[in-house]
Image (cartoon, rainbow, N blue to C red; front, side):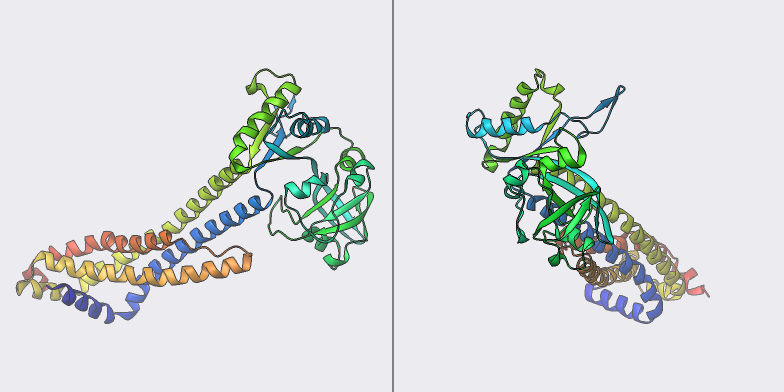
Length: 411
């Protein structure tokens, strides 16, 4: 049988049973649409998180305290109290005046903790960041109105605050009206002096849902501690990131009188380290979503096989007639495989269109970048064709093995 004749015959057979054809295709449509939509959602989430991390600052190293030990139990990394303001000042002096560290341009000491914030009848629990003026340069913070934390605020332990737009919206009817008003952080009154520009983001460390106060005020007045949460360090260029990490690391080891680097009471991470960890997590999440969606493809394939088996039974006499007129087993197999592949490929194409549409709708609603991977589309269509061959082969083989005489006698 010629190729085009086979395809035409398959299309005619499928047209004669429109409802069955539609129902058989539906499983593939749902499966392919789910695969593309979920993979797109995972990739969009990954792209959004990467953009947020990169927007926090380039060439950035973050020094975190080591794990805290209590009663022989080691806590989580970053839970220790080993970094101090003196450490940050020493690194800055070594980089600016002493020429001990030649790869660092800016040093930002930071103290962060979540706190309960009240403004009038509104309240929220958000991230409080104690910072210095250099934080805005290191983390690429820009102002929508008002000003950022100044050095005089830090030196005088002033009770002033700069709000992110989300924090301002949670506390005031209008974020733009926040500047000049007063709020309370853990019961302590602060005057709002600035509003930052929105960066976009969500989750626990949303840069728009933060409140910035002077680091000295955060440590001494609000929290009553003498240690830092992190020290952010900006390297002079991306090319010297590794060298900057080594110089700062060995400098702190010497300051903390630690000879073995493996016993360091701090950890230094770069933006690339964070991006790599995030990419690994979101990649696993995307793979998991795709795996779940593949189950619906498997169910759709089983549906195709069931429909083709029913078709074989209904067309038993037709198969017997064709074989008695000289059709070979290969011709019968080709005929039924063609029908199965057409079902799955058409379903795959419709599923692709629906999946792309869903991806766009979800991305728009969630404020994520619209991302559709060409490889996921090609893979989905290829998988749908493979499903047609795999699940259509058994019914096709069953049809080809029918004896012409027995087939013609079938009622």
